[in-house]
Amino acid sequence: MDWKTQTHTLAHPVKAGEREIKTVTMREPDIDALEAIEELDIEQGKPLKVKHMRGIIVALSDLTHEEAGKLHRDDLAGLGEFIAPLLGDQDEEAEQS
Image 1 (cartoon, rainbow, N blue to C red):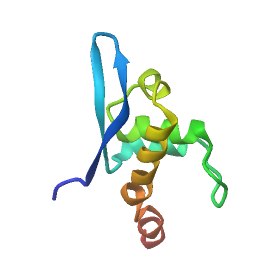
Image 2 (image 1 turned 135 degrees about the vertical axis):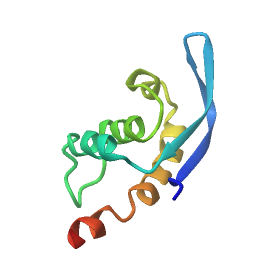
Image 3 (image 1 turned 45 degrees about the vertical axis):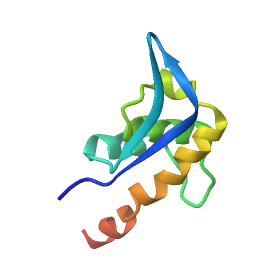
Image 4 (image 1 turned 90 degrees about the horizontal axis):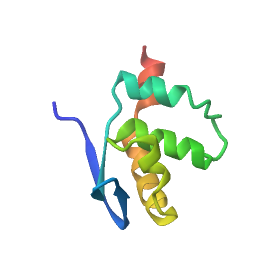
């Protein structure tokens, strides 16, 4: 089975050293990503803070923490739309265990 991915073309590309990041591909979480997201102390039912969004984006993509910090707010919002579908069935799977 292939892992679900979503690619977002950045409206505002980011410079990272000598390279320019024009797209960010986010993928379904593996165990490492789930643990990293769990450590963000996200409170269920409360809105995500920017630091939560940044942590989730770093966990689900190949961006470093520093690169994610350079994202324009419009791109942060665009990537945020991908988070729910990629984390999708996490609660259902936990309940079934």
